[in-house]
Length: 320
Image 1 (spheres, helix red, strand yellow):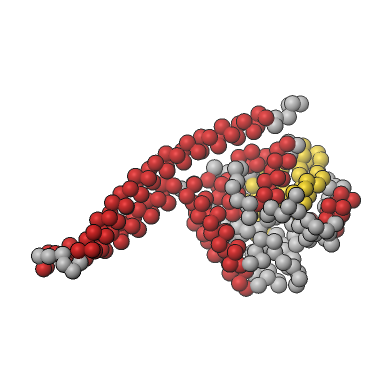
Image 2 (tube, rainbow, N blue to C red):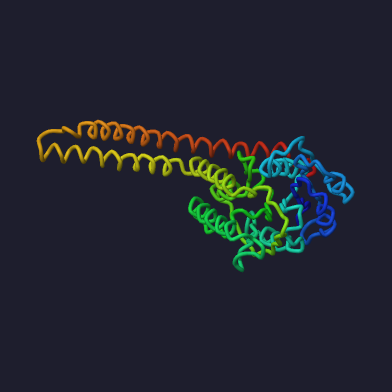
């Protein structure tokens, strides 16, 4: 049996729903000796903190709205500090069915997985979810699946469960969102994932904190995934760029070469030859850089292993 379960929810102006959500949570969960509820107040201007405190939750305040990514990192730090065995993340607006927390915990309790993701799309598009957002989620799933080499059914769902080992291993950069980066980071480190269908409720007047602007969401999400691909697969990433540049150089250089063979002169395509040679040199430089990046990637992985053991020893339970 595990000792402690921490259920966490970020909150930004959720005074109308947060008390109901907290009070609907069970006091005890199978496989755990105790349960604690954490609310990370992300700069709310209403009575979110008052309602959360009245409902018995532990509240950590951000002095301004920093985003769900920063809120999640605050939750990770607190979970490690109190030596929580499992962290469950969910929303404070009643979007998820709290009775399905056990579905997320079961793969971790049976040690089939190190973290568990909820799937909102097992029955297709959820009711009241826009077609554009549904399509956008599907495209993100494909990209994350490609980068991670694992079929991910819902990369953006915030209803999840994480083991202590995954929390100690996570080192995140994004403040906008964390959902995609955590998947890529943990799978890259060899952790096992399980995905379970969950129920989701969309409300007519609900405004997403992350995807309220689809253009902004797509842009920021793409940057996070792009950076993750660069960090986790630097050799493939930079070699792909080098190969693309090489193909362009081949076009310009080849055109000039063929013209010279046929007409015994580069004129009027001398500039093509110069561009082709320049791009060929650039391709060579990027290729060299790709091997340097791969070496730095190995150093980074070793540093993260050292950081894992430092965290583990720093927050180790003195009673053990």
